Length: 520
Image 1 (cartoon, one colour):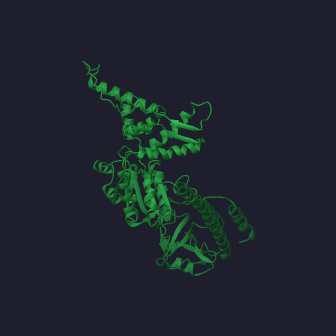
Image 2 (cartoon, one colour):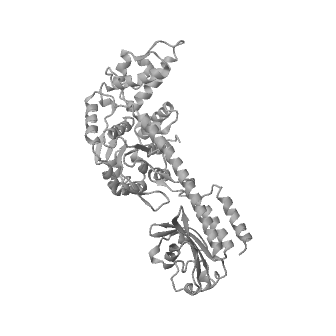
Image 3 (cartoon, helix red, strand yellow):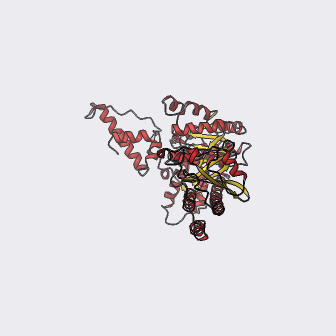
């Protein structure tokens, strides 16, 4: 073979080395160019993985070849190819079994016998002086490779090794960049968490703190339950800080914020090309939390299929990234949280019983704010100081009647509702002054709790109507529900999730009810 055809075949591949291409496309171009230079019926690129050869790209072989894993010790031809540094051409009449017998496309249609007609040659690939894998060529016509110069295959093998090296370096750089991004996110989370504390002096709060101290020092899986807004994430952080893993990462994932397809990728990671948009290999939350703690918030929102995959990881500590069959071992302490009654979810068939029992090794109930007595004033003080600093005030305080109003309110949204209420009320109160005051006092009217405060003086019950409204009880009930939902949506700027939380109803159930009532 002259130098010109070889150069013509190699130049596009050399150009590809400087281009950003998906690995499968880079390898496909490599095999196509090789088949153009060295006429054959099939070509393959295989990576050596321990005692196995794994096909990365094939051309002219059955599609299922990519799913096969060839044990080297069971294939003499592969053993011979890997034992030499130079290309090897097998005799047409070799009696060694061929790994691709029956896999070359078109073989069955032509009625040929693989052992009589296969011509085979191949060459090992070395990356950084270590054996990396093989390139192989196969032909249906006996003696087809006898006239070929092995130097051409050697040149191609060298370029193939360079192609593989470039692809792996690009992958390593991309993975390193992704790791750095994720580490920065972990550091950001940790920085935001380190100054938070659990505030309270009530008996209910003290019991919770004691339970955290008790179970925090263990590696038991904890299921934190409680109403929306009670501070379940803060409890998870306290559990992590009380554990022997406190110097390791605490990684959080809100299971309700992502669709099922992305939840799996976030939890277990993925390899490049696992799905559309997976341009780089990525570690999941489990691997990022290795040695530390993984906090799954809103765990009640996980689908049954994701529950099954999570159960396997919790039982064995082994996981597979999406698109990969390689096992990764992790050592993670799991903390989960939900505002759902998971036992009821299990009874209704919406939750796996085995997964529920695996999560609730140590159930931990966070008391609602209405059961914490005067803790509401301590927490209000914390949020008042935050807002004072944010708004640049000398002082931000509560009047006596504002304190009484806070103590009398039922707090359906718990601590989160209190936090938002203080911030909103402070801003509205400040807006009433033409000049910024030195001391800003929030009155009960600024808190706007009058509509929901319980009536302090007993009132006589309203007289029952003489007759039901037109349409009967069902129509009257529907009308009341319709008004209640519309008012709640108006308060939350048409945010259905927030409305569902205030109404203490599942969002999906609220959506169905609204549709029946003609609101959607």
